[in-house]
Image (cartoon, rainbow, N blue to C red; front, side, top):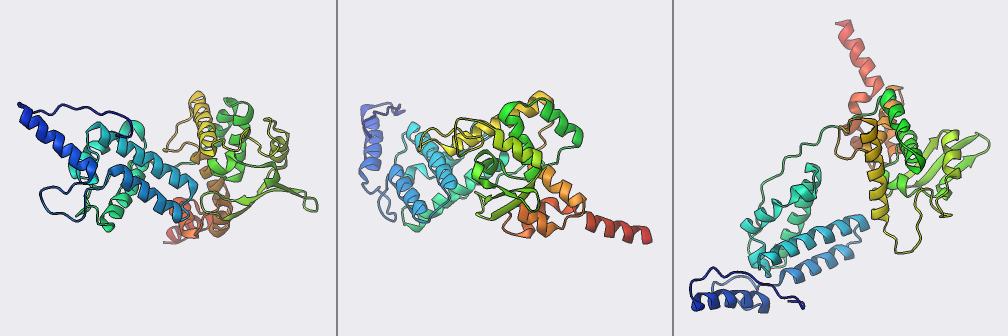
Length: 333
């Protein structure tokens, strides 16, 4: 198939039994209808995945999400081929999907990531069902997400983290702490994203957030702004990304910067307390503002959330005004 030969044991005790297994595989590859009537012929899994990805691409899907779909469905295809399952009616059955899901923990250590991968898989299954290629949608049991709540850094933890970080990694950590930028936005920061208001003597980061497309206007400390402008990496446009080629992968760069931050946490002995360790820096920025009385809706704008309810979901317990009112009510009783 595709220039590659696949082999497997038939498990048969006779030549006739082996021939039956061979014919079943040939039926998958040629699209011949099986003995029992079903809707449509057994389309190849590779063809179904290709059609699904084209559909997602036509939807104008975020490039990062589209990349995730490609990566995940390639793993499904490779796993199924390894079991000599080439057609979707053989591959997209419960026992094969359960066996495939059992391979996820080493690849996706985060339970939250595994839940996202299963959601993507379910989307593909519904796509195949709506196209009439499978008779029913296999329903995998929900995955339990055991991700702990993201906690902000204490002042002592932050200072300890800076002591064990060097060069661009140290500057990136300071940027995320004092701007609340997500790792993807911080790692791909451009020098042109920095704006200086001479009248106010204030530096701002002005750009769109990658994930939501929301406009960001974030004031940052003057010393941090000067450190960002002074950072040299061989690229005139980006602060941290030495992008040499037009085809240079943004995701690869962001992943490397995230690994450097994680390494700094480990060297400093600072507990991770969440699946994405860099989020502790973002949480530190948000909680610091909220505990000092900055309204929730303003913090939501600075974080680039589409809705204030998203901010409230993660940081409601840190809203100082609400805590003060509750304290007053309880004390009065």
